[in-house]
Image: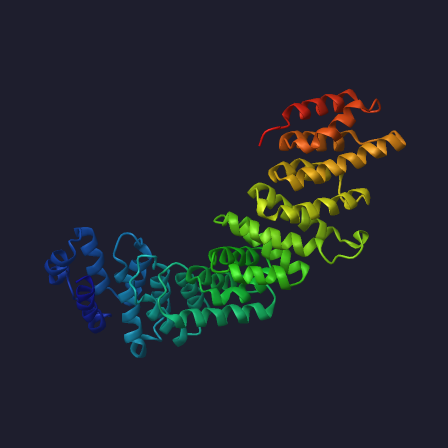
Amino acid sequence: MKKIIFCFLFFFISLNFFSQEVTLSQTDTEVETQLDKSSEDLTIFANFITGSLYDKVDIIKSVSSDEVPQIFFEQSLEFALQNKDLIENHPAYYPLILSSIKKLNFNSSETTDDLLLKIYNDFSDYNLRLAILNAFSIIKIDNPNVSILVNDVVTQEFEKKDSSSVDFFVAGLKTLENIKDINSFDLVFSCYKENISEEITQASCDTLYSLSPMYNDKILNIVINNDLEDKALAFKIVTTNPKKDKNFSAEIASKLLFETINNIGEVSELSQEQIGLQLAAFKILEESKWTKETSLVLDFFNLAQKEYYELMISEDEFTSIIYALKEFPTTETCRALTDFLASQYSETLTTGSYNNDVMLAVISTLGELGDKDAFDTLLYVISCPDYSDEIITASRTALEKLKWKW
């Protein structure tokens, strides 16, 4: 019914856009009956009808999007399009379109995207097109041609690889965020990777976030098949997404950890980027208590020992890995730690030296695991006079925590 009334109103507009002769009394009764508007709103509508093109622009600019129905701004655009041949050269014509577009919000009608698409294709003015992209980023999009258009826009901006039109670029990305079309993933990921500017990178990141969980297969493919830089970016997108799926994060972390610890050649050839990804992926598995990948975790523990001895990870990083193994309470975990503790014990017997913090981490974790298979090795530690009182006490505490019935 609202649309009928506004079509009625704009019938007068199209006939009298330069006229000052239509009065409130001509529209008051019908508008008030149909829209139940206050006298103030009726005055706004009547003034819009009777005013000049300049007046119309001023009225559009002066009212809030919440003051009047969205159809008011939509019909203003319809009026501008329908009368283009008559008033296109008027100085207020473009300002009328621009100001009307800027008033559109998420309450717009289902056909607004069609209207804006037509305007975008009919006019080449930069500011008009930017306003349309900004509107596309908030209104409901049903027309698939909008997605095609905006993907083309973002592609063209990306190929420039500069930030000279950052506003246009960001508006396109935000529209893709609103549309949530998984077919945009590869393009947006490329924008994210290129890091053209802080604003563009953040808009790309937000758009990628919006594609969860549709992007799962895409992310998985990157982590398995792409280079280290792409793996790191995909992992970051998944693990920093405010609406992340913890199970999928753990799955991606396990794939990433596998990719970064296998087929690596010599440990000394590992880059700090690879090691950083290993630690980050392991942290996610720890937080998720991802016991289904305990075997992989223990492979990483074995590698971490080598990285520690090669001074490629710090003592704090190494002990953090050891403490985290309590989240993987299996017989295999206990065996791996017991074997490591036995090797440390043998080294102490041979050299008389040991690392106090590393020893405490292993002993404490064995106590937390409570596996009785650690008994003999802990007992050996207690009987060794070379160890500090702190280590002896920790070993006794760990022994008390062992579970003899399962």
